[in-house]
Length: 264
Ligand SMILES: Cc1cc2nc3c(=O)[nH]c(=O)nc-3n(C[C@H](O)[C@H](O)[C@H](O)COP(=O)(O)OP(=O)(O)OC[C@H]3O[C@@H](n4cnc5c(N)ncnc54)[C@H](O)[C@@H]3O)c2cc1C
Image (cartoon, rainbow, N blue to C red; front, side, top):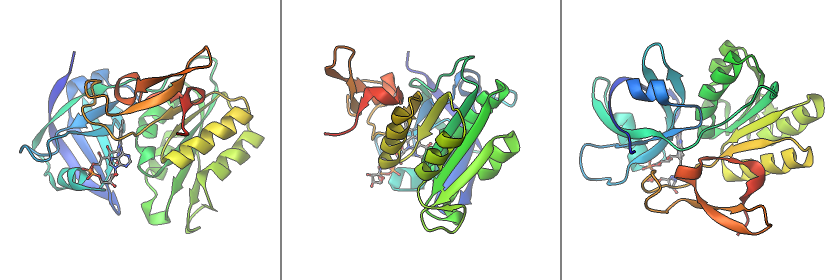
């Protein structure tokens, strides 16, 4: 069943250049939403833009019945979101998709986030720490000022390392350099990743080489978000060595690293 929700904006403010955090009073999203799931946001009460925009659940606060969305302003839809004032009621569909999973045997885990891909990892880290996992967080950003959520992860009790493309903070280079070192130093049971495609591919490569299971969230462009338009398919391996296509919105956005076929 498609879950349409009306939610009041409790807060919507910039947290870094281009990045905004929107908090919504939304009982069903807060009670049913899981880390890695997303919502389709109707960014304007008008018909234009027609398509809703997919944004991950960034924070899920069951006690206060709120959820937060962390989004980067990249185009018309996210710009309209950033201009929507506190107190307004917006329409969303959700929670949608299949989120991240973990089991009792996953004791030491790493979360790798790049840019706005860091957003869903905050809710994930919160749940994993509640479940008494040792959580390592590796964050990648273009520059220090575009780094988001470092303090959120630290205050939760995660072990955080940062990489910036220009070397303005933390390791000068890619976040996957940090993952390579962490894999060398720590016995990881699971790696979770969300970020740009080149980063995701490298995370899959490194974890496969080290035989560590990995879950990746794909932020494919999406039309409907509910499996109807088939605009967001990805190619996945099947057990017989062939391949099939899956819908990122319905079968994902989280997939096992080894099942996704990236090239072609
Ligand atoms: C499941 C899912 C969860 C997402 N979660 C978040 C989130 O938590 N925070 C966040 O900031 N963004 C997230 N995104 C990406 C977000 O949906 C897009 O950035 C947004 O739809 C862009 O809308 P727009 O109208 O502002 O930009 P548009 O005008 O539609 O596009 C502007 C530019 O952004 C590019 N773009 C648009 N969509 C995507 C995309 N999905 N991936 C990469 N580039 C894109 C376009 O190619 C174009 O260059 C998520 C996407 C998916 C599929």
